[in-house]
Length: 167
Image 1 (tube, one colour):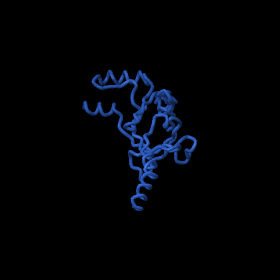
Image 2 (cartoon, rainbow, N blue to C red):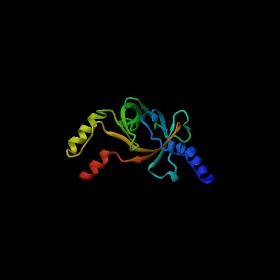
Image 3 (tube, helix red, strand yellow):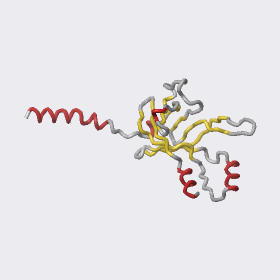
Image 4 (cartoon, one colour):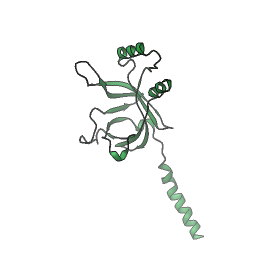
């Protein structure tokens, strides 16, 4: 009888703690500024780590990788603007993002009509190509999150999958 009482006590004491570990990640848990950490070989090609901007280490962060996720599905990030005179220029853009708490998948989109002239020329040259507006920027599944660190698994954007299927 003592063993049964002891087991019941352990179950009641530890059960709620273990259950709390499966707490889903909600959208507002992601709000804030995040910087990408340089990829380590042991992380593999698809695993990425973002640190909060306050705790980010400049020695291991990727330049111009800052993403700020805001309420109202707004976000800010550095986009590459290519120019004939200067091949790589980074510009801060205000864009949109979505998050599905059931699947843990987040998607970040370029601003609507981003590089519109360029994509119109591409559409003229390749009329069968599907070009979404707004276009996807990043798509990833969040595998771990705490106050200062977010681990993600990089996923392909839906645009790339649709275009590959046509060819």
